[in-house]
Image (cartoon, rainbow over all chains, first blue to last red; front, side):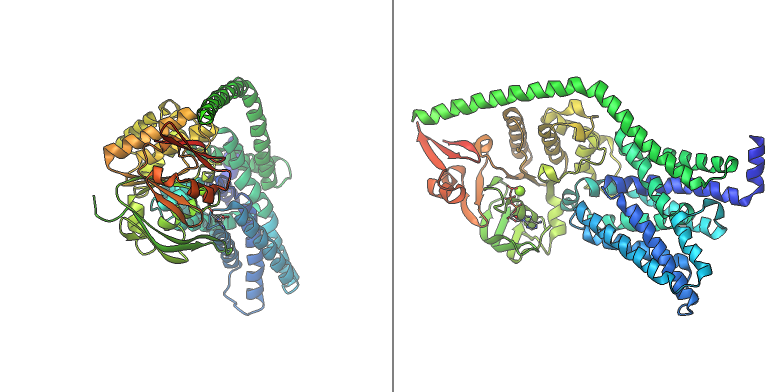
Length: 316
Length: 267
Ligand SMILES: Nc1ncnc2c1ncn2[C@@H]1O[C@H](COP(=O)(O)OP(=O)(O)OP(=O)(O)O)[C@@H](O)[C@H]1O
Ligand SMILES: [Mg+2]
């Protein structure tokens, strides 16, 4: 134990990794949860891959001398915001299917752009693009952490302020607008801030695993926990524990910490499904029987009423 | 309250982006306050009319006003007066909302962020649930309720909220006779005690025909408007529901028979 603490104290990259793990858990709790509520979990993958495409564009612009000051991370942020805006636009009517399609199209477009630009980028910089696919939480620098931290704090604050709005937009978009809430603004706010946070998290865990961390804990919690606040809290815990176990494992064995975290998060979801199934078997069966017979009685009553009324009108 | 009519449509037409003309040449006026019903077969534009006067869809032609406020220019003012319950299938069940969260939504939507529930909000919400006999389920997950129970909770959401106009899109669909009576009585009591207007879409006039003051019969345009009895005209019914609809007169009562509503009795 003391050895580990000593190790952490001595190695800034570990400190950064631990901090990143906490921040990513915050992002998962704040945006993963609402994306899953919204039925939009796929957007996490779309945004992460858009970040990759944006990085490719950034490197290209910088390297070709077209826009020398252009930092690749700007490209990543720009692309992910575009994906969020596009998805939001497709889903303004509140239809989730349309948003899913928009995410799919932007996913494909971003990856195509990335592959296209790879031919024009000096080979030594190509790994930087792949870095976004795999990610490495142990290679983050101070600027990465500062950016991730500021978006995570912003996201956390916005979620604290507006979580009811985000829930209302997901539950009843039409009703929320009719009651005078500016549902459209919250709809975009939620998608765009989530996208920024996911893009920055992608640099740490990689496009593929960011999906696991954003979505699996939220999906698992949504199966078992029956209140919005409970889900947010439980997502934070699952994501954090997965990340920390991943990091710790990587000290002992030679593995990618994010890979372990992703596997654990996915397992949490499988476990939740299993628990739910067992729970349903125990609790719901007697209930289900009851409602069924209640319904039968109701139908029977209803048919009696109709019979009576039929008799009335036929009498005539 | 005001001399302005509750609803006033002038030559209103609504078209969806796909080219579907859901409403055309709609002109009518309903006095305020009122307990009114909008009826008509599936796809006749009932929900579309509601969305038009709530300002959720722009008219293609013409205007519609609520208490004198234009649905496009003054939608903000209209929405302050409105409490709206959409058709039940428009409520997403993917979010773990409790019954209380749904009912409180009616109150919190009228506040500003962060929309904390005060003890007054909670009391009013419990009272509203009491009226539809659902207060025992206060802490139950909303998605786990039966369809009819969910419908009652949504009605409670409207009762708990503030605003002088309640708009309910098919609050009786999928409910048994008992629930219907309960919902209708709660609405009627509320209408009489609080001087609020109620606008409800329904397929079945049976449970409400003695309570509603005005009925608007739609089939993409206004087919009939007036008191329930005058709308229950054999010719009108045939026009809307097809030749199988019949009005039967028996012992001084009128019964309208449609496949849609079963039998509808009119004194
Ligand atoms: N979002 C939409 N896009 C395109 N057409 C639509 C849309 N919503 C409704 N319509 C069309 O407008 C017409 C009226 O629909 P509306 O939902 O108003 O009917 P309704 O009277 O409420 O029917 P129901 O009893 O089934 O609820 C229908 O023909 C429908 O196909
Ligand atoms: Mg409808």
